[in-house]
Every structure is written in C-alpha cells, then in structure tokens.
Image (tube, rainbow, N blue to C red):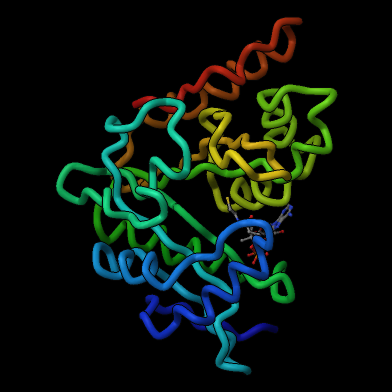
Length: 242
Ligand SMILES: CC(C)(COP(=O)(O)OP(=O)(O)OC[C@H]1O[C@@H](n2cnc3c(N)ncnc32)[C@H](O)[C@@H]1OP(=O)(O)O)[C@@H](O)C(=O)NCCC(=O)NCCS
C-alpha cells in the first residue's frame, strides 16, 4: 500500500516538479520555476503535490486556477486558459470554475490511487470555496492510434461508453467527470492527442442545479446522434459554453 501525503505546493518543490514534468512529458518544455512561483503568488490554495511518505519525494502534482468561463472562446487552448502556463488570468472575483491545468503522477507510481487523491483535494477545495464546477481539457492521449479510422468526437464517445480505454480521459471519467465538448488545437504540438482534447466537467453537488446536470448530459446525446449519422461533424462543435 502506497503511503502518500497531499499538501499545498511550496516554491522549494520547484526543482522536483521540473524533473517530474521532464519525466512525464519528455517532448515538451517542463514547468519552470518562474511559472510555479507565479501559481503560488496568484492562487497558492489551488496547487497540490503528492509526497511519497517512504522516500519523502514528490510523486505527483495537480495545479489549478479559477476562471470566468465566458471570457474564453469555445476553441480556447490550454495556453489561453492558463495564460501561457503562468495563471495570471486567475479570476476569483468573477469565476465559478476551477480550471484543472495539470495533473501528473510519476510513471513508477501510477495506478496506485495517487491521481485520485490529488483530485479529491481539488473537489474538497471547490466545495470549501462554493465554486460551481471543475473543468479541464483531457488531452486524448490514445487518439493518434485511432485517428485514421475515426474523428475525435467518435473517439470520445467510445471512451465514454467504455469501448476504448484512453490513458487520460478514462482516468478523468473514473473521477466522476463528464465529457461536455471536444476541441482541436488544445495542445497543438502533442503527438499523442494530435492536439485534440475533451472538455470535461465535474459539478459541485452543493451548488449545481438540475439544469447544470441536464446540460452535462446533452453532449453525449449529441455524440450518439452524430455517431449514428454518416456525417460526423462534432469535432468542430463544442457544447461547453455556459
Ligand atoms: C492520468 C494520471 C494522473 C492518473 O494518475 P494515477 O495515479 O495513475 O491514477 P489512479 O491510480 O489514482 O487511478 C484512479 C482511477 O482511474 C483509473 N485509471 C487510471 N489510469 C487509467 C487508464 N489509463 N485507463 C483506465 N482507467 C484508469 C484507475 O483504474 C482508478 O480507478 P478506480 O477509481 O476504480 O480505482 C497519470 O496516469 C499521469 O500522470 N499521466 C500522465 C500525465 C497526464 O496525461 N496528465 C493528464 C493531463 S490532461
């Protein structure tokens, strides 16, 4: 049984977090000390690390900010939602959405419930703050293997229905998230997703009402209708607008 402690991130974690992101995303620039410093300046409560109690080392992290969703276009990218990874767009005065910008667990420690604990820290945070929801872009890590045979919309539908497992989206769905849209150009240079992501949402049951839950279900209905029709045009659509 892995013994893991979740706590808020501190600036002296920067070196280990840079190494962790290099290990997980070898083809992308790692989180920088400047970016982590900026997260801690604007929203320290939204930044978490997981510590392996045996080694005392960081084995996971989750970072987030609050956004006013209507400020963003339906095709907004990860860079837009995170101000290029600096979170200077954090907007607690207007925003009701916690934007989940990153979650990562050391490859050697994956599959032991650490991602789940990091997400639990986030859901506790939005309940404490009375926010409406968590939203994120789940990059479709398994999509490149299927891209010649199906659109990203159909891929998301099949993952949601459990016909295909995706290393990221399946994990997020297990945490109680629902897919509410598909976007292209989300992480433009990501070779696994080819840039595509599902927009996902978790509603705070203390705050959400029946309309919020109904809107959440609508996207899967759209996907099912599109999948049955020969012209699957859902990649361009996004029902994530509130
Ligand atoms: C996604 C990630 C954070 C998951 O962390 P993790 O610690 O391995 O996940 P957990 O062990 O807590 O798993 C939680 C649940 O998700 C499920 N799950 C995890 N990975 C899964 C996968 N690849 N496929 C299907 N289900 C998965 C687990 O079975 C578990 O289900 P349970 O609640 O029934 O027990 C981790 O794999 C990771 O760091 N990936 C690389 C970085 C990344 O892609 N981040 C997302 C950016 S959008």
